[in-house]
Length: 71
Image (cartoon, rainbow, N blue to C red; front, side, top):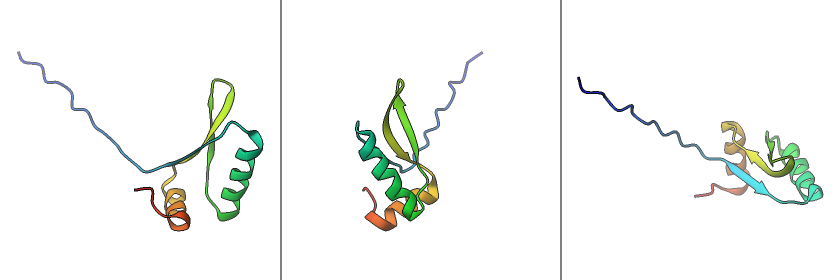
């Protein structure tokens, strides 16, 4: 009997990252995103917050509208 290899599905979607080690700079970025209605989250390396991530479809569309698409 021949085993079928499982198909790998790739899912791509646009997203934005803002990386900065300064808590103050990340706070300013987050405040600006809040003002225009962009939903964002903070990602950490270990216990150290490092990135601001914008991945929700509506928020990415809003970023594209304000600053233009990344591609």
